[in-house]
Image 1 (tube, one colour):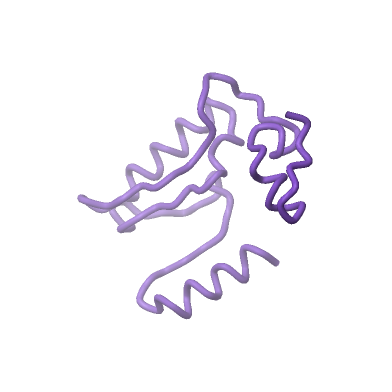
Image 2 (cartoon, helix red, strand yellow; image 1 turned 30 degrees about the vertical axis):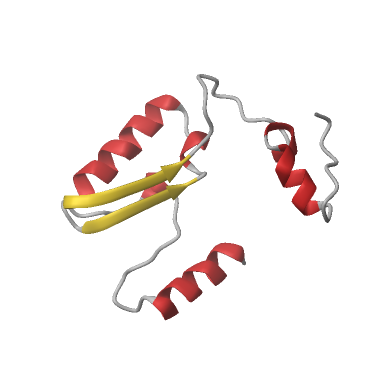
Length: 104
């Protein structure tokens, strides 16, 4: 439900743009076909060998001067904490109405 609602709102606000939600490993993108790619808190889920393939696909699909925007965790570890509040205590604070329920 969440991605569909976000995309529906984006399409309403920017009808001139194309939006899609899909696995980055299953995208059928033409060369230089996109002005931008957004990978928001999703790319760190890929094994490193798959990630290099996905990033190469994005680079090939971007038009000259296109933009790639991403956000991810910092560090050399491939593991992601089991709960966001363990890595980001403020998430627990906002989710609990101002109280920080994280173990840190």
